[in-house]
Image (cartoon, rainbow, N blue to C red; front, top):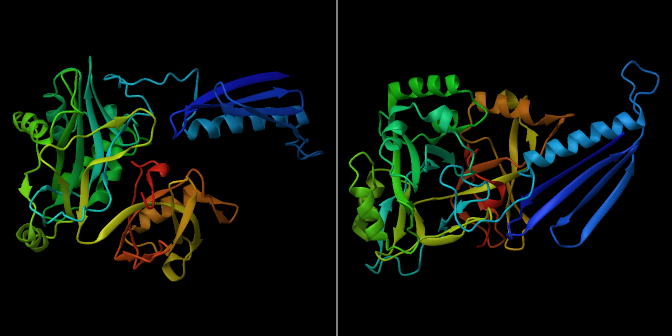
Length: 404
């Protein structure tokens, strides 16, 4: 039997990489590399399995099985069939998987209290992207389209009904309970692409009984077909404020009084900008740090889970200790130490165990992304007093960067 399939994906450097898998009788042949670059190849002779048993497979059958498993794994990692065309402009009706809006810089500037910075409240939610071409769409930060599941939610529909054609809006979806406390963990049930529309709507009706769902529109990438990345911040924000249907963050002058005001209200922190600040996007799947800065009372960041072990007592049947890591500027993973289950519920820990348990050990890949609250870092990057806050289905592992 002969089979062959080729998949392509965009690398973090913007180059197109490929993998080609071929079955030739009992042989599994794998070729990979960059398009128009050097090609590497391996040829594996597959062995028959379970000889003499009812589930016996021949070497040829085993080659086909490994072929299908490798193709499935690569598709889960973001590869797709057909040739990847690297565009320089997003498609309003079908955002390319490698489209990436810029992110705030992790550390505030040294002169942040100079009086030269404007501030928005930093909400503790999840990023979603609204677009409109011929039709309206909603995407997660990972560019997973969730339109079908979420478009009938009234707060989402209100935004979608008021987006002009050929527009891309950046939003933070926020859930605030009746006590005024942000509960970002409630949002997973809305943006998780593996859920059905019925499950999402049921979850919405459950949480809206005791809180408020708010899509906070904080910036524009395209407006009526115009690229807004070169337009100053205050002008972009003015356009958003002209649409009554949008909830847009209030702008403050950043100073000590504002910090005290926010501390009394238990805000997480601020996003700082200059009034003429710009923004950007990339078309290579790697979000740039540009145009704004985070300022927090405590630090939170996103990490990949490199390993996990079972806990003790009530967590004896859960993964309850997690080894954290981030990618450095060379693309290598740096270990950041261990933390406990933090704010994960028993239901989340049950689900995590079922999905990640493999032959008695934690299945590392595809990497799980988690948000962790911590007080400080050591000079080697290890976290002091880490507390796991939530699982981030909306973040790509490669976004978990250290020392940028």
